[in-house]
Length: 261
Length: 320
Image (tube, rainbow over all chains, first blue to last red; front, side, top):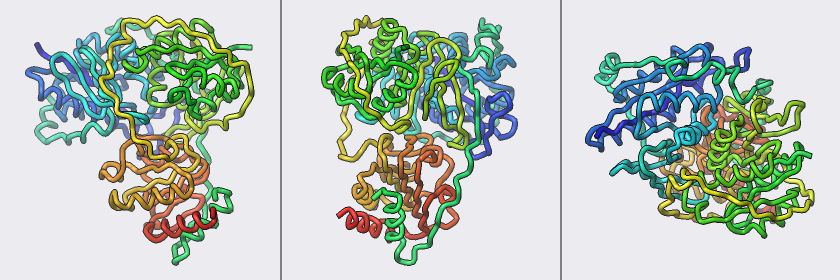
């Protein structure tokens, strides 16, 4: 039987750009270019490697986001995912992590899955909570923050490197997996892959397709509210000296003055 | 006064510093009730009481170690139902955030992660967060359910405030999901004897300029002279010079020490995201144009192989 893999990805503002908040204190997505979150590229890569090992596997890449988020889907398709699902709805604007996990859970169930894979966190919000929330909502095991992952005989196994210990984990499918940037370098799309991606199907879904109401998501439905967003004042320029042979001693003098020594 | 649940991060009853910070912050919004899971509750209770816990709810079961995350969520939920708190505070570790995330879904409450400060507000606790590589500071609150908030290490100075700290057994029934992910084996990380990276008051990090794993001993030497933790940039980690667990940056650890020393690190946005909230920033780099110098309180343009050993010697001699 075919192994159905769904990779959840996010379209995020480029971190090297000048990121801002919009007037409603959501992330301003008009002012800065977006792209497929780098951390989700690792998830696409692991999905491709798992699919290579399986007899028969189908990879669906899934995102929730505005029209431009299709760019993230195209990138994943050009890397080798088979098809894409785009959840897009004006009412989704301002959806928080709980809402996102709700929409993803409904969409993953709509697609059908044996394995859900995502990156460890987005590179914009960076909360790192959606994979755990998704597992909770789907009622399946969470096998998260893996630096190594493998699927065989209806089981997913992997290594989770924590602060205090490195753990070997095992769960039965279906399951939700998240991978870290240590899981393996993501491949670059080939020219052939980029051309093939243009012909791959992208299914569009809105809230009603998922049986969700507008009040359950978006800024209105959010479980949290940002009341203030203030740009930090730029750090005042510090002292920079050129080492003329006494640089280490000068630095020690500074540290002593600050009571660090 | 409203009760506030505080999830205790500990190693066999030795309470870690971020939990003491949480107790300190919790007292701003209510009476802290600590939730201690696993062994060592009696030892932990003494510390927790010293820092303000009016009560310590405790449970121990093999499930906490044998399965991933979910048994702890079951226990925290049991505590939540027993207490009906005004808020739930959890340390912002990788596991802490996952526990908080699942609890938030279960109790239908909003969640705020990686708070760097917390205060009481007219409509519930207000959390300060540092976002977009610390270029913005936001104030947020939970608008539905009971606020679940994870707090980053070094967000407050722990203040002693002796309280009763009465230990009570917590009854936990584990749901079917709790045994979903088995921990097949666990290899403890070898202790370096240095402070934990995210909790350290001083962090010394090395980057591309360190140029080889063998040269990281220079960084370690400076760190040890200052009693600091050792960090590494992604470039140094990707090159295999230092373990990933020490990586500072967007895909590694986010640190906020009193003093951050960057040696041979240019200061790419991904690195800055992980250290920009450090109180005092110092850099040593050959390249005068490196973006890290835009952030520093004190910078030395120079060869780290000259500057770092001289600094280490000077620190040692001044400390006697």
